[in-house]
Amino acid sequence: MTGGRLPVTVLTGFLGSGKTTLLGALLKRPELSRTAVIVNEFGEIPLDHELVEASDEQIVQLSGGCLCCALRSDLGITLAGLLDRRARGELPRFERIVIETSGLADPAPILHQLMTDPGLASRLAVGRTVTLVDAPTGEATLGRHPEARKQAAMADRLLITKGDVAAERVPALRAALAALNPTAIQADCLHGGIDPALVIGDAEEPERALPESVLLEAGHSDGVGSFAIVRDAPIGAVALLLFLQTLAEICGERLLRVKGIVALAEAPDRPAAIHGVQHVFHEPRWLEGWPSADRRSRLVFITRGVSQAWVETLLAVIEAEAAEAGSGRAH
Image 1 (spheres, rainbow, N blue to C red):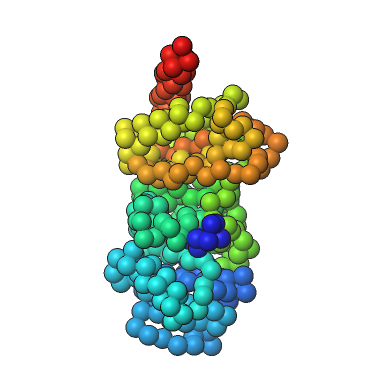
Image 2 (cartoon, rainbow, N blue to C red):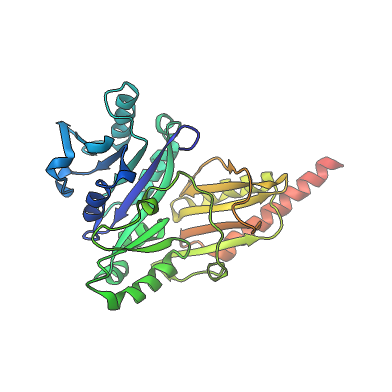
């Protein structure tokens, strides 16, 4: 948990990608004990009878301290209700939440709500966004459906399902996913079998070191593209704040996701972890130290119609203005 807040994993994927199979398998694993899972309809998940302990309208309690909650109203209301009942001792003291979206869902509004709802942001922390893509139809689905591209572009983990029935299509699918989202970790997921740590993890993990191959602008699909900005020199705190504010104001919904780690001139030994979704940014989170020997600032952008050159120019202009203003104050 992060500062006492419960981590939330968003599990998404296009229709038929295998979310039901994965979630059904995960619920049987001890690593998922003390987990609350929110789904759209109970009927979508094949819960074994021996797992079910009790039921009350929207909530099914499972063995091992887990529970499933049907989402039939506003997500914020559902989350707040679960947290309040947990606090009153009416539900098991679950330690994490997994939200399973419908096949056509856009994960951005969910992440927005977790980051901006005052009643939730103080109690919940954004964890991983995990997207399933099936091998038989995944590449074609990415080509035809913008919803599928956005789900893949916003993911931290991309799980390739049904690779055993379409092994010949997996390499091309991996390449398509890497072009769309080069920083997401890819893994195979057959019949729901996966290391649970890939799905649940910890909340707000620091950005891992990026390989050189993803530091160049990646391919684009329907205007959705990925690129990374890397800086050797630390960035001033004022310049960083103005940069993020300007990005959010100008780009808005075209800024699908921004994640990264930044060396600040004022505290180069304690980097700031950055996390933004569209026009909303978390307050930078200060890390105790660098997660690797690479101390460069690295910001990864998933955007629709926003070019790397424009973003780099914006940062350079703001840095120059902030430096000039600081020089004026010094005199």
